[in-house]
Amino acid sequence: MMRTPRQLDTLLRIRRRQEDLRASALATARREESLARHQHTMLQEEQIWALEKGANKARGEFDAAVVRQYYQYERHLARLSVDKEAEVTRLHRAAEGRRNELEDAMKRRRIIERLRERRQEAWTAELNKAEQILLDEVATNYAARSRSATPPSKKEHEPV
Image 1 (cartoon, rainbow, N blue to C red):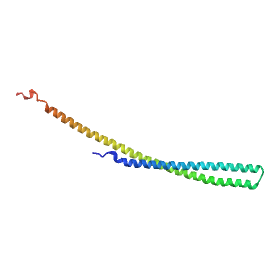
Image 2 (image 1 turned 90 degrees about the horizontal axis):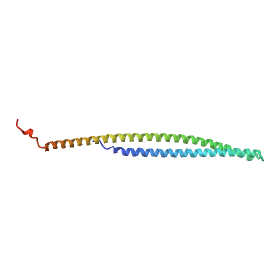
Image 3 (image 1 turned 30 degrees about the vertical axis):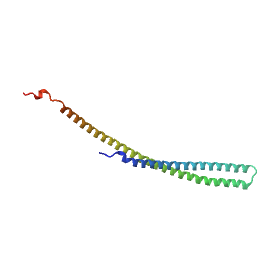
């Protein structure tokens, strides 16, 4: 008789755990990417503010040192923005890699689930077959007993 399909339960639990870990890693990577995008946006807004402030200082009472400081600050923010954009790109690639890992983990889990289902179906079919054999044997024995328990008819014992 076939072994029960429960022998795949441990492997299925492992595959589910691996999938959960990959999903968690993907969520973390996406959170980091989102945070970096937000920081990049904030840097760009700060850069626009510095440009506007420098332009306003250049129009009003002109102090070259103050205007230069705003434009230097804006250039510094531009460098930071470029670095942050590179970080966003790197984090996006990492998140895509995590997503691919999650998809692979999901495929491996589904394979085990399908294998387990097939084994369960085969095991159930084998049990049904064994049960049918047992029921047929019981029916045969019952029929044989009922035939041997009935008295013979008179025609069978009359001499010819």
